[in-house]
Length: 269
Image 1: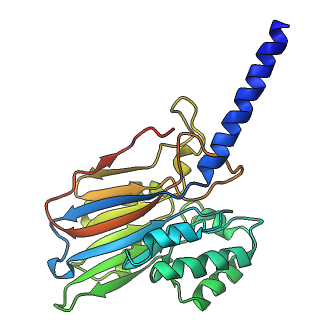
Image 2 (image 1 turned 120 degrees about the vertical axis):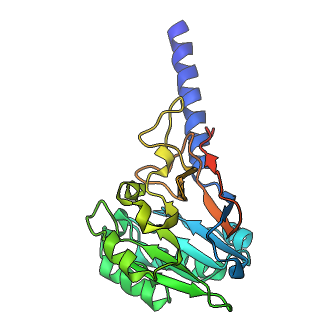
Image 3 (image 1 turned 135 degrees about the horizontal axis):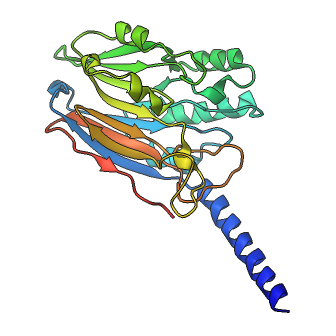
C-alpha cells in the first residue's frame, strides 16, 4: 500500500513538472539590456536592437510583436529560425511577423541547414532580409560616423569565415558581431576591435536539473573591451520543454558612455 502511494505521488509530481516545463517553453520574455561603450559614435545617440535566436519549431506570437513593435531600430535573427520538419511556410509566417518590429538581419545556425536551405535562403531574400553570411553592413549617422554589423555563417557546419566578415567591415568603425554559436569567442582577438558579440545556440541548457545542464545558462558579461551576450533563445529543440532556462528575447540599447561592466547569469525556475 505504501509503495502504491509513493508511486502515485511520484507520478503526480512528474505530471505537474511536465506541465510546468511545457508552459515555461512557451513564455514570451523580453529582457532589456542597456549597454554603453566609450567608443560608440555619439552622433547615433541610442541604437536599439531586438535580438531573437533559436526559434526552431515555435511560432512567434502576436503578444511578442506587440511588446517590441516600435522599440527597435533593427531586428537581428541569431540563427536556427527553423529545423528539420518545420515547414517553410511556418518560418515565413514568423518572418512576416518579425518584419513588423523592424528591418531584419540574419545569420545562419546549424539547424537552418536541415531540409532545403536553398528555399529558406530564397524566402529570406524575397522578404528583404539581409543575410550576414561572413559579411558585414555599415550604418552611417547624419554626421558621417559609422558602425558595422558583422555576421558569420554557422561554426558547427564549418561555414564560418570570420576573416572574410572582418575584411568586409569598414576599418575604424564600432563593431557588433553576430554568431549563432558563442564558441566564436575563441576566434576573437583584440585587434579585431569587436565591442559586442550576440549569440544563441545553447538554449541555456534548456532543461537544467538542480541548476546543472549541458550548456551554461544564457548570460551577458564583459571581458576586456568586449561584451558577450548569449541568449537562452526563443524556442526549443527535441522536446518542447524547459526547466531552469526560460526562453528569452532581448531589447538591447547601445549608446556612448562609460564601459559597461555587464554580468548576468542567474538561476531560473
